[in-house]
Length: 208
Ligand SMILES: Cc1cc2nc3c(=O)[nH]c(=O)nc-3n(C[C@H](O)[C@H](O)[C@H](O)COP(=O)(O)O)c2cc1C
Image 1 (cartoon, rainbow, N blue to C red):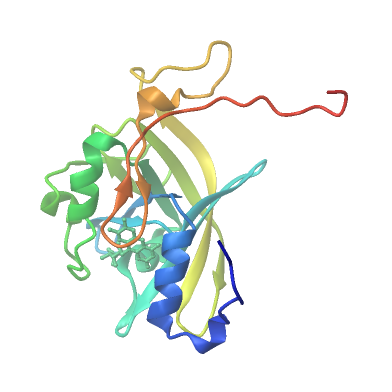
Image 2 (cartoon, rainbow, N blue to C red; image 1 turned 30 degrees about the horizontal axis):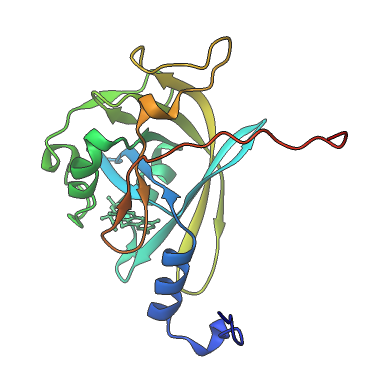
């Protein structure tokens, strides 16, 4: 076994950098973003450049790429309404999530394309997926231009969360049991990780 010399990122093509990054930073959570366009049309698309950033304030980050024609619809809508919802992708919604990634252009409702219904968030000006079991309702907190290849990092303030009654909690806490949520992670290209073995490992204490 040998790691060898590091490959310098600057010597790689954009495609090669993408292939390395997205197959090494795995599995990634999927921010399945639902938004509403300035024309009122609902929009739905998955984003796996997505992460939890902070609990207080409660922040999530999503990096949205631009097309040669301009920003993707999710970003246009987030800017217009100052809001979005994050639908937590579980095993039962894997196919619908993938269907919603179609590049269908503004004014096209990916909810319909994916066979889903939109429900209005009671907290922010955005819809969420009917039947989804967990939602983060977000307000646009900050936007950051992150480079020449045209990606915009959107930071969302989670102003509320919805968790379905059917999801199990760790008693006396708000932790949702992962085995009941059954979340999907993004690997590279068209590959995903489904829930598998869960190991609990108590954190070491200085006195141990
Ligand atoms: C699982 C998955 C993850 C994706 N992650 C991203 C991402 O992080 N950033 C991005 O710009 N596009 C990502 N895409 C592609 C967008 O979903 C796709 O471009 C979509 O059409 C954007 O829709 P919109 O224009 O309605 O926002 C991803 C696609 C899939 C299937």
